[in-house]
View (cartoon, rainbow, N blue to C red):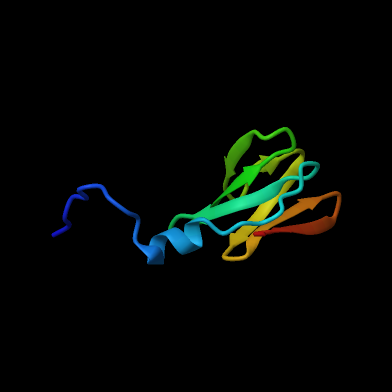
Length: 88
């Protein structure tokens, strides 16, 4: 049985991975998170301009097909070329 949180400080085992700092490009899409079950991962991507979108395999991201999402980032394809957007 789970126990409801009574508030307070975030445990270090959660806060550490959730608050890593990184220099993020403002001119290119950047993967800022990967989530979901291992067989159906989704990715949060920050677009130039600051808007955030969630994508899944099979969807389009700025005209490119999302081929796959794994623990390291998103694989995109356009015009026969593949590209990986990695987590920072």
